[in-house]
Amino acid sequence: MRPSHAQCCIHGFACALMLCSAAPASAQSNPDPCGLLTQAEVSAATGASVGAGHALGETCNWNGSPRIIVSLWYPGPTMWQAIEHPNAAVKQMPAPGVGDLAFYNTAGGFTTFGVKKGTTGFVVKVYGIPEQSKQMAIEKTLAQTLLAKM
Image (cartoon, rainbow, N blue to C red; front, side):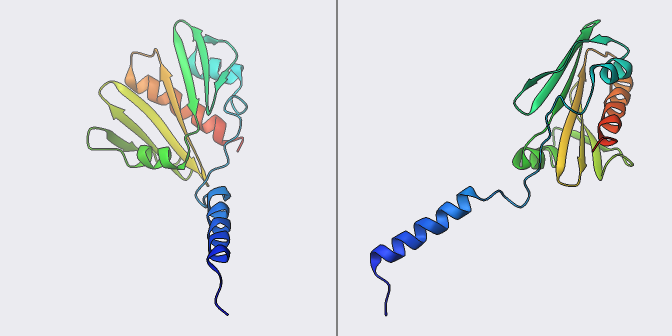
């Protein structure tokens, strides 16, 4: 017996609903962005007195004195792909030995540290450190501190 037009529509709608509601296989489980680094850990890594972290979506920022900002961001899978495979204007430098994958992305004077462990990817950025090598070292230290808790 051949299915009716209405049955086909209902079946198609049900399949579409299942596909739209299912989490993609590459989805990451993002923890609370302010929950894995403490104020004391961020202060120790930067050498600055920082306040408590303030969450905004998938990002947490710690503000310090002298003028320092530390940002921890958990991008979704689509954004992570763009970070992991940047365009030609971004210089990427691997950072072996941190998580399953780690790298610095630099565009002009702006450098970020991306790390992936399992299905979770995150980005650490420190603002206010004029010496790039020191900034990169702080970002790596914060990432390693966070990874030790994952």
